[in-house]
Length: 126
Image (cartoon, rainbow, N blue to C red; front, side, top):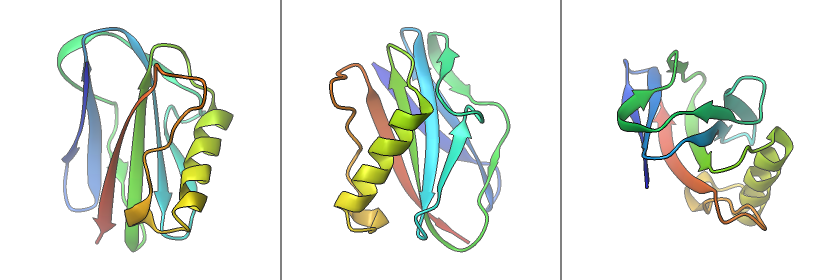
């Protein structure tokens, strides 16, 4: 099992955290109202190897929410590495399926992969 959470540092910055009982690969991206996709972790895309942790572990650095409007953050944990192109593709596909409505965006599915667990938050930027 895995737990994902976020913590506000202040009104414009937040930190993402996780807890997983098994080692995993983590990837995080965000999508804003304009449809702009941003890679959050790891910065170069793909996935970040994370160790098992029974308590909450926060990812390094806080994220700054810029601009106005809504932003949806996706965090994925998988048993095997995720590549940046696949993450981007499934998020963009879900966005198209929701006709650009961030509130109606389904949790993206990774075809052929049953090891990916996804979490999402819809945030209103100040």
